[in-house]
Length: 274
Picture (cartoon, rainbow, N blue to C red):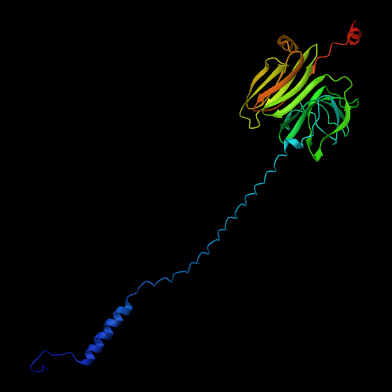
């Protein structure tokens, strides 16, 4: 029955029935089940080890090189003895120089030729073998050490037949005299080096009493150690005899010796004859 004045409204029971039909239809549609996500383990971060800081080794404090005045002072022709067992004889001054003979025992006796000459924080002497015991050698360089713990000591004796007129050593300019240059053959042996290994000059003159200087050595030294010998022929041609003064003009470390050349022993020559 239609009510007057408007459309007919469905009853409450009919609305409930319609809702039930729709609900059944929705429930009847099969929906795929929702997959339950498998929980993934949370990755545990691997701790990165902190780099261990590399400790720089402490910079050693360089020990000051002893003063040149602490090097034992010996004259050419003087007999000295070793204060340590195993002292090395080298072909030139320096701790990296070739060893020329066996190790010297304690109290081995040596004849000083020239020095001291500073290399590698040591003072070095050119020496000749003066000991009858082994090892045998002609000449070589040995480190003298420094006071109060030197490697060499004086014996208070000199060689029986000293062939050396004078030996000098220093750093920079120097003058020595008077020096007696007798007749006969003489030679000057020298060694020089720039302590900074950059180069230096080395010049030697002999000044006769009341005369003009005679230049005998003029050398330009490079970055290493230079050595030389003024041969007897050249020495004789300079005509320097009698009382002289030796002057050195140099910015090197240096040492030199003026030596008398021994005449050949006629007995030794005769013994070698056939």
